[in-house]
Image (cartoon, rainbow, N blue to C red; front, top):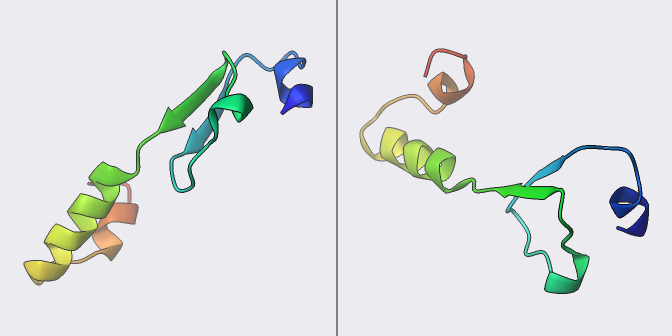
Length: 59
């Protein structure tokens, strides 16, 4: 974390698949929610759709 905080990287983007403790967060850390993707996958499964379609670039 310290190396990322002190690097010249303008932004670090991660998914919220694991909790990040407050002491590990820093100003240029962006945490994106995977909830919309999981919700769409569940919807596709229950409506007999295609989960693969979520990853083909057309959804």
